[in-house]
Figure 1 (cartoon, one colour):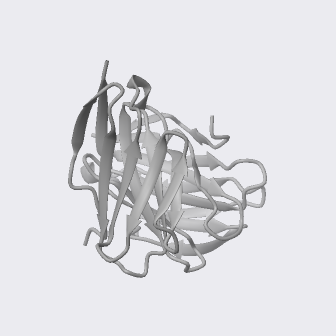
Figure 2: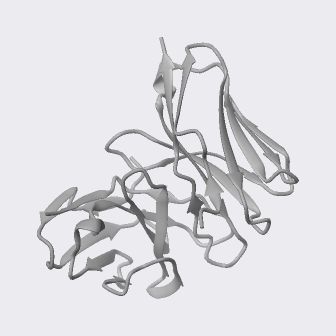
Length: 113
Length: 113
């Protein structure tokens, strides 16, 4: 158990819909990272928050957005969903500092029908 | 543009033998590399890392080798055990202040009893 929790575990929805994925980082971790893993792909970095502020953006679509709340939990919002958005979405957290290991949650599997 | 590549999607090894997983990268600015292991239905878990100022790092049965001139790193597992069967991802990061990971596509290791 990494200490990072993600809800829900599975999500099935239809094209055009909007969903919210939730992540609670390990206690004390200020950084939250979101990654997407599509079929046969590595994990693609989407976005990072540090202590409530956006720190870095990867190849995140404009239909996707995220935020980190004062209690440090984070939400990833996916809207106008398309079939190609079906993937595993992982959240990771780390403490501040150089090259700290990231701890990953179990992921949310999103299926868009 | 895949900056971190794992060209072998799968590898089978007999129990007790050595497993060698390979990873190539294109960005010479990467200065920290990590290996993660992933079991089905779980998030990736950290295995071992290496800084670009080193060429080898060892932790028990796991050793990572870095060849900067060839932009290549490898993970050696000796001796391999059935419990090592998992997908292994290599990742790289920059000293950019964000420390987001760039992941390879993974290699599925199967250790045969």
